[in-house]
Image (cartoon, rainbow, N blue to C red; front, side, top):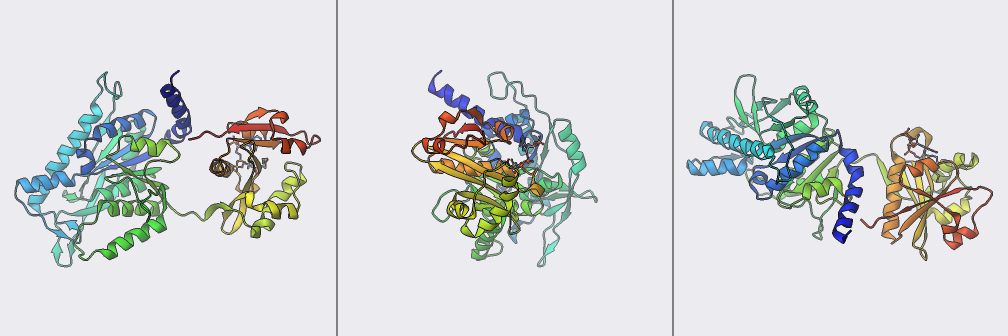
Amino acid sequence: MNDDTKQYVNWFRHSSPYINAHRGNTFVLMLSGEAVAHANFANIVHDIALLNSLGVRLILVHGSRPQINERLQLKQITSQLHHHLRVTDQDTLTCVIEASAIVRAEIEARLSLGLPNTPMAGSRIKVVSGNFVTAKPVGVLDGVDMAHTGEVRRLDADAIAQQLDDGNIVLLSHLGYSPTGELFNLSVEDVATCAAASVDADKLVLFGADKGVLDSSGQLRSELLTRKAERLVGQYLASLEDADQPHTELSRHIEAAVNACRKGVQRCHLVSYKEDGALLAELFTRDGSGTMVLPESYEQLRQATVEDVGAVLELIQPLERDGTLVRRSREVLENEIDRFTLIERDGVVIGCAALYPFMQESVGELACVVVSAEYKGGARGDELLQAIEERARQQGLKQLFVLTTKTAHWFIERGFCESDVETLPNEKKAFFNLQRNSKVFTRDLSAD
Ligand SMILES: CC(C)(COP(=O)(O)OP(=O)(O)OC[C@H]1O[C@@H](n2cnc3c(N)ncnc32)[C@H](O)[C@@H]1OP(=O)(O)O)[C@@H](O)C(=O)NCCC(=O)NCCS
């Protein structure tokens, strides 16, 4: 097997947890008109087809801003911006409808591709669109009649869910209909956000020209909490001199992500429509390719400090008493507390795990993985395990081992393999407590 094949097999194996996690989930993908017009859109469609075949329930929401502008220019219509929104008068509305229809047809055509020599061979995707979005007029803003510029009033979540249940991809546009039979031009961000919230989507993905959000030193932020994201948008808006100035795409996208999080969507992703594979990298790799915006939780994972010694003792003592964990005195714990990672909820420590590195052998001992009884069942053990693995990788360790008497299966189910006392680092072997007769399990830390 050559190196490329090995790398491919390795990548494929590492993506399997994500494949399992995403199956049956609902994702809303927002494709601006710019994204649809970009040369990389063909690749995005292939990746959408792949998500569909992996069992992800998909709602696509498209815009058509540049396509509308093209038509307006062609017909020499000057459309007015007011409060950074387009005023959609009757002539403009005609351009909006035309542009939207063309973009929709383009997406449907691309999703229909199934030629044998393409990545979409045999995909047979069914795309459904309809009057799922009910709109209302924005009305008169500071004396300016916004005419057919509207905002989302509601979405028919049940009808959309039914289509998704039938295995269809739902395609929504930036057009909405009112019960009075009128048509409204909506912002694509508004439709995408409301769609994600009303169908309880697991993710909202916003395709933009940028890779995501950069920090002050120009590095891509892979995660951004909503409060920070909101502050960034606030700073940007405050820097605008003119209220009618159109907002940048990135600020609109961050704002949409924040709104979606506030409405209950747990994960929003900003990814590039220009970069081939950005969507797959964001969804199927640990580091991602863009910026994930997520709500603050009142639970946080953090390093322990000496002030946590009491709380950790309280958490682990019941398990020391029943023999699940080896006893640690307060003194020992005080010395070792910086090896602990904690989950704190509303100021209370409800979970912990520790990493003891053996630098000479490049291995680390995972120890003391505990979740408080009343909080079990929330995958917090996995969260702790992941954090310890991350910490071990940062320290350059190649393998984790764990000694356990009662929790063998929990570790086996998380990829640990039974090993032998002889494989332990010498220092650990010297102190191995034969009486406890613990089993040894190891797990390699991949380099990815
Ligand atoms: C291991 C632990 C941290 C996981 O906490 P958690 O993330 O909240 O997960 P849960 O306790 O809900 O367990 C998740 C799954 O593992 C199983 N599991 C838990 N403990 C197990 C054990 N000792 N042996 C086998 N399976 C176990 C659960 O039954 C559950 O399976 P299910 O989803 O099929 O029902 C927690 O169970 C714990 O604190 N255990 C006691 C301390 C311990 O044994 N630590 C390891 C020694 S270092």
